[in-house]
Image (cartoon, rainbow, N blue to C red; front, top):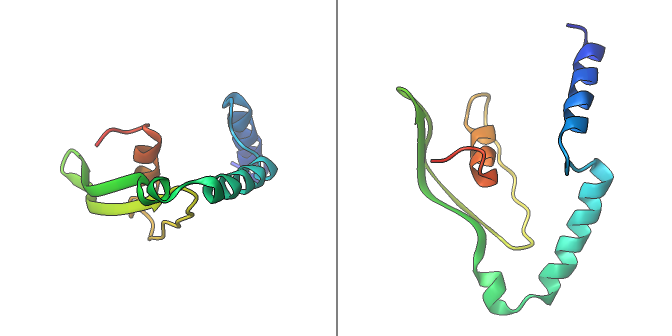
Length: 101
């Protein structure tokens, strides 16, 4: 499949997903998150918005995640790095509720 065909299919999928953010909308959302964070009290900042503790996920005998732990505070930005097949997309799907541990 030619790269232009791939791009057309990707654009079609994006159009089919209501609520999907464009790069500009994502930048606006980030600005809104920063201003909201500034208005939070100490307790709200102390409670993680996302927290994984020793998360394990396997498909049949294949371990995808083996003891993943991390937290993200409100207003904080984190990066997930790793090699191909390392579980990055799977972790994001868990955060979004698309997969259950």
